[in-house]
Length: 239
Image (cartoon, rainbow, N blue to C red):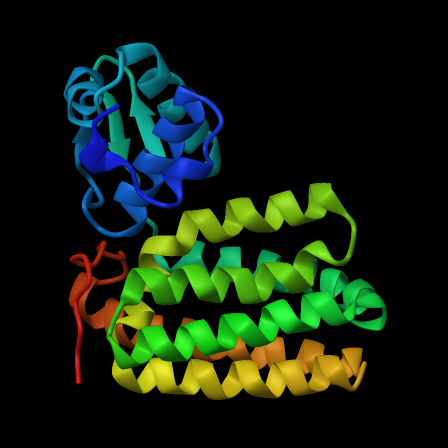
């Protein structure tokens, strides 16, 4: 594994196969590997500095998550997602995340609330420096502190898979300064509801939070791609 490829997230990996999976997933999420790109195993192995087998296993996992597709006699390609598929993913997320929030809010401890507050601060700092990768990382920490507190690990893992499948589109949403500000405001409102132990309000705020993101993606992507989403270029910033 090359030193240049090692990021803080990759340092948490416990095996070469896990590190390869995290790296490939990040390459899709940040737009380095765009929808439709053919994924040649030997090239990817060389780029990341590993052998072919961990790349092959990582691609199989990403195929199961819907991030890549396998075409017989041609190999693996980065998957594209239609707006209809994105809407379905968000609908499933709504069902699972609502259940998680209803279970977690009444039992959420002070330490977890503190982690959510810290994630908001980290997101606001990333917003000021226009650091989209750092912002998406803190955003994930904010939400999954809440989801994991439900103590239903299989459900939390299903939610994670759904998030992974749409990370590249979330990065597009966060590339807008306007949307970053709105996310910060919405997170503070969600945290306030959680601190009041108001699970009904927290569910309603999270649902509106998701709908705002989905609406913005529809508006941005449907005219440009005629119904098919295109992976954004990495780290694009707009005023």
